[in-house]
Image (cartoon, rainbow, N blue to C red):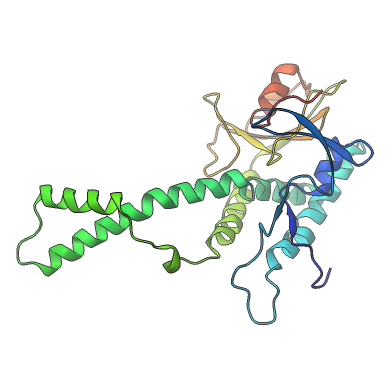
Length: 273
């Protein structure tokens, strides 16, 4: 790839998208309008500069993460996807860790996970700043702030939070993505893979490709914590659902039913005929 790597970054690897394409085309759906449109595999789930490093080292082009994902994650993981679609199951010993690694990165590289990080950052940082300011004020005055004055200071700062963007590492999104993927990979390595099959198309693809099903019936498109009783659902083709689970006995029949497909389709914009 050299330095000519594209700055049009796929949120889902093209090898994954190909499992849902016909003649190189997918049918997409716009969430807001609810209408369908054709789109090529090359253009689907593309976000410009999503993995670009805003502070590259001297001599680098800022595309180090994109190259890492393409070569180290999507290449080996894509080979495992091709093997499954070709009927190779169970996977060879070397393909299973590569696929687990790809799935872990899919959870951490989505727009949903990045938005979650921004949401937490926007709410927690002002609160942490307010707490530190009140501590500083306590240290600088002879008499500590009263609980009422402390509350007033915190509320004032929360209403008008200081601009902290310039003090934060602009690479924090990428760092968090890679750290989270490593953590999730270690957790998923202890779960077992089950491949469910259907005799007709039942699945469609969400923006991030995977979804986490919690034991309480809720669904999440991002980690950040994987409970012991959760499952990861990954549609690989319209009739193939990969499940990573700590309790494989739940899927002993290895049948993809409409009910199970409905769970896997959570988070996608809606069925496409």
